[in-house]
Length: 275
Length: 190
Image (tube, rainbow over all chains, first blue to last red; front, side, top):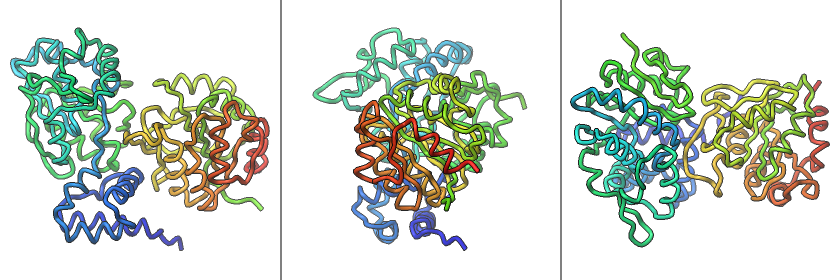
């Protein structure tokens, strides 16, 4: 009786086209926010309808990176939710300090703001020289931006406030160079970061991590994909390893949530439970 | 003839907290629909806001939680720092995408997605505020056959938001704040 509206059908066909032609599967992305990003993409690329975008992305491979970049959500800030970073500094890093070598996986690194926040945290805790950070994203465009570590100078004030609220020991300005209207992260902070393309939808375990940060990524996934990724994290963590999600994420509907014990339920910091 | 409505969506900004107090204090305890408010507060702690509102509200007030469904006879407030959306499955979804018109949560985003998810069966309310967020969203609600209610600008603490909503969407009901809860009771309580 209820006929789906034409945009709903177009969206379905767009998702099918990306999967069949390009191997990117957005079928398990939460539709409400995905639909918004697709509509924003229409404006950015100059298409009237999703149908038109589908036709173009089928034929024009050069358009794909732009589409993928548009469908990922690269918005973050340094030390977003300072209380989370303070908690990591005060309670998680001291436990990680007992390992001779520390692996941290940031899944969904976007433009890198959190990678560098983490590197600063580790540097100030005296742990950075024995830490390897793997920063991954499924968008090559995002990874390239993250590697550059260049951010608008107008963001610097917010980042600095966050850094201090997170318990930063110095001044954030010690870690970047300001030039014109840009700030560039100090190259020394990049020394132990490896950037790589990894798609949580289809790629598997690739490191043994002591801590995984994946903040505000699973909010774009359906329950079943969320569960799949939590299983991937479970399988990637060392015994008693830590997982840090976004502060408003809800994993109550995922079966794999039983593998994690919240060490701070409000800040969504979890530890792998004994198997 | 009552139009079928699944959900009441509310948007407000400057002066919004006081307005929400008045609105929520006047609702019938048997109110049969969920009410979901997006209020630009600038505060990180929406749980505190919920507690404050709960003191005068006739219905329970909670923060809108990702992946849960809004329930009848309950009030929800959007968390700050995220856009609030409603999925086709009737559950809340969040997005940390860029601000829309300097706002996150954006009232436009919420109105638009709630109206799409409910097949138009949404009553949208725009109250006091100092920007035009919510105007486009209210227009979408009306286009899809929902009900638009706007606080009379002269009655609002800040008139910009309701005036922008009236200009963009018009309204099925435009009235002073004190009369909005009684209107909702009349429209929706059997």
